[in-house]
Length: 264
Length: 304
Image 1: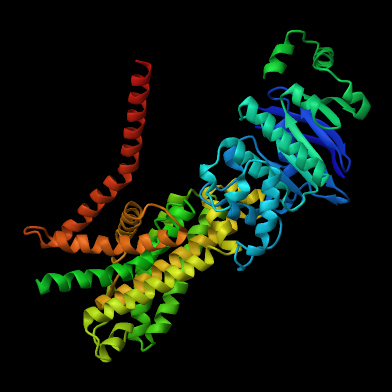
Image 2 (image 1 turned 135 degrees about the vertical axis):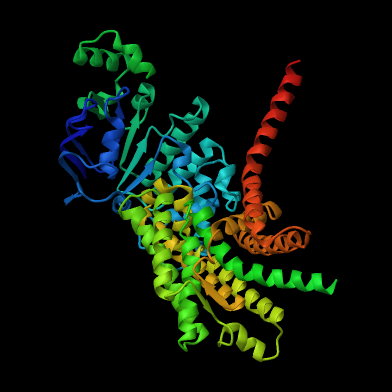
């Protein structure tokens, strides 16, 4: 379904700050996969996601979606294929606009926008039904401005907006990292509910090992721009945090790094 | 007394005609979050085109249509500099503003064109028996209302919503598949189209077009927007548009009243306006700091 072939990315080419962020990534995500990508700071997780969504283009390599080569396609055109949720809850919604207006905009994801009114009464039942899935009571607050929502509520709303038009792949970029632990768990529950109800193919970036182990049918570990572990299904279910740390130390030859990875 | 009442009515008419400009500025300043200084030039462009069309025998409506198009083109240039050539917003608009000074003089071929005894939107109504002030009020009311209604409709549309969201959160707009370069460009074009239309109306009302007539327009527009926001704190989008129009009218009335003070000269107005806007822009910071301090004090007392 989504395929990365030999993807390399270097920032600051030819300068003192030259930074090889991705050093040849080959990754194939099958339809229905829920992949957790884990790695410490600077492992290249976010860059990987940004290359898939078109924020950056790879120096070398290809991004394929189905039979289509989307390597050079601009970000806004890829919106038709991907729904994205960012780490910062403020980044996924328009604060000065109403919940209904935000959802209405999301219902036009990847479609041609015209002079029809953005708010369409006929969509309101769908909005209410989806908002009710969040179990946050937002279905009764359609006309409230997003500014007045908490970080967790905004993140949950962003999840709805990312999935309202069913994306081919849902991309989650550490979308619970900026939330307090309790809210983070709630947002993860909502994520799981949406992913399984809508049967979405999902790629989730996280630096939380427990989260990566708990959610998804597949786990990919990134280190210094390379994939150092890729386990799925049965093998993944039996995985523990200790296994991950051991694997990490074995590959990097660095024993003291465990804490940094765990906490980072 | 009736003299003062008359000047207040005249100020209201002027405020309504300038409100079209303030509504245009609202698109860039508030909706797009783009500091667009093009307006000082595009306002005069509207006047320049109008004067040339009318003095060469064109109809007032044709003059206004062409002024609108002239403003749209000016907005396009600023948008092009910003989105395609990646020049920062403020600088792009200053470049266009400076360039427009030459363009406006080229259009007019001289710095000032009188429109006395010409067929304008205002002379037409005056011929129908409406007084000078009455004409201004009718034209102003129609122009401001039509502009606000059109804006309300457009910014409720799919494209309009994407433009509003661009000022709020461009990353989200791209994520939803709209090109923020295009939304910025459309917003700038509409805004400056309205600014030039306002310039056209004002030049017809005052009876001349002058290459310097747009000087300080941005500050007057900002003053109108901020006065509106203070008086009608943001409720619905419609009320915010009404607030801009009301702000523009109140600004003109205040100016008229200030001019009544003995010793105040008309050239003192720009300084006065600049001070008002500076204070108004400062106000939110002051109230925030005040709320912060009150909150801190409250906490101290709780812990004591």
